[in-house]
Length: 319
Ligand code: F6P
Image (tube, rainbow, N blue to C red; front, top):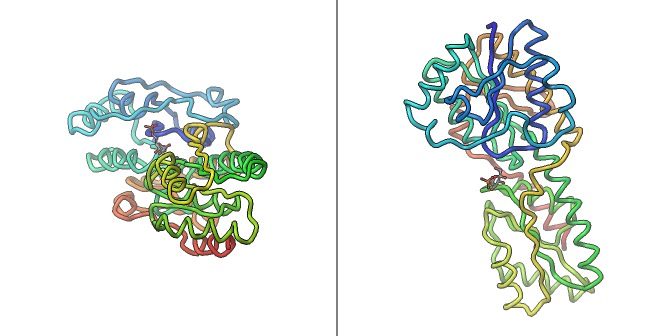
């Protein structure tokens, strides 16, 4: 393999730039030319493709977002769109593609591989909702952003003796909520995988109050529903003074943590190795600090599992 492409697709995640840098540097190290595709699969179909030299990825390891930009494309879901994308690559002599993104992006990688164009997936999403890897690129940075917000909100929650609900991202997964809740010492963590009745939440809040707790923090995963509606229900049924914060897109930005930079560098480099070895339709993962790779079809057919031991522990510690 002498020429490969790289793109980022779906929601951006801190650390994607470190992954792009690793792909470019590792490929050039092995005398393989690299082409950066702008705007994900849409850019691939449009031919928004440029060769990347070593210098093009200088000074980006510390930056959030993605220098290649990202997009979601409905046209790419069609056979014609996929064929168009392959033609754009063939025209330039590109023989393999690294796709950095979440499960939607891996669907695209799967389709191109099925049409004979080798793709390797690198999991980049703050949601940590991809099977076959302990962590996805961006999760740790996002988690730390949330934690910083929780600590700040706790200061004002203590001063005013209120109940605070903090809605966090994660799409259908509760990982961000669970890890943020456990590390932030939340009284309750509400996740889609393990719904708790509102009465139970209120019972636990009241029990805390009875033993002298002056404030409470509830972390709600967006996959469960709206933080504002949840807050209204708590206030109506418990008469507790309640405030709601929806953290929003702040969770997707910022300089990646060391953890995310290392993860992204290792995964990006591994993706290039797999392409050079002639592999196709694989996803790179990290399990127990060891790089692994799995068939992308297998990954897409599985459902991400939450760590239930952590969930149980968070309840025990919030007693
Ligand atoms: O997948 C990452 C994510 O930030 C989710 O947590 C969130 O639900 C979604 O993307 C938001 O997507 P959009 O950028 O399309 O609003």
